Structure formats: C-alpha cells, structure tokens
Image 1 (cartoon, rainbow, N blue to C red):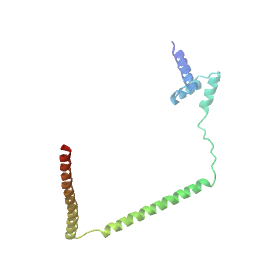
Image 2: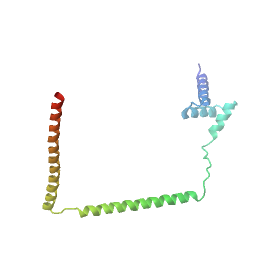
Image 3: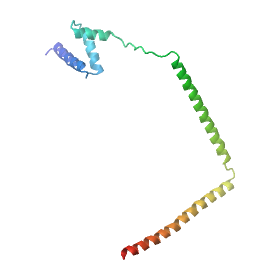
Image 4: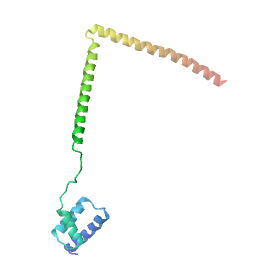
Length: 146
C-alpha cells in the first residue's frame, strides 16, 4: 500500500470513530488537519473544513445586571464577619491562658503534685475494685465446679 492509501484508510477509521462518538480530541484534530490540507468536495470534507475554521466562540450567558454585584457584596460581608469572629476568639483564648499562667516554680510544683496525688488516689480506688472482682470471680469458679 502506498502512503496515500494508508492515510485515507486511517482517515476513514477516524471518521467512523468520530461519527460513533468514540474519538478523542487528538483524533478529531487529525481529521480537521487532513481536510484542511487536502481539500475535498465531499460533504464530510466541507464539514470538517468549516469546523476547523471555527474558533472557540463563547456562549452567550444571560445574567441579571445587579445580581452578581449584590452576591459579591454579601460574600465580602460574610468574610469580614468570619474574620472578626475568629480574631475575637483568638484574643479571648490568649486572655484566658494568661489568667492561669504560673510564674513561680514552687507554685507550679505544688499544683503538679496535687494533680498527681488526685490521679494516684483514683488509681488506688480502682485497685480496690479489682480485688473485689477477683473475689467474685473465685466464688463463681467454685459454684460452677460443683
């Protein structure tokens, strides 16, 4: 086969894919180039030459003249309010942290010691419950064995 016949069979194959809706953009561009470089009087040739000449024409879209401006004003107002709320929360949190700040090392030691004693007493209380559970388990084993 000659190079020309190969090209024509390739274009026929691409046209079948195009009309079936399975071609990709590169294949469609190849078809447009072919018909632009090889003028044809067939209806397909005329169609693809015309499609190749068309530029991306933006579609007209109706929009209300004042609506977009109003929407952007609300967006800006919402962003400003959100920023003010965030700033107030950050400053309030910083103020609360300063109230509980401990500067004296001895005072910090005492606060830590008291917290650890409280945790320790809770653990010891749990230990006493575990002894009772152990007694219950032993009694249950005795009952189940008999």
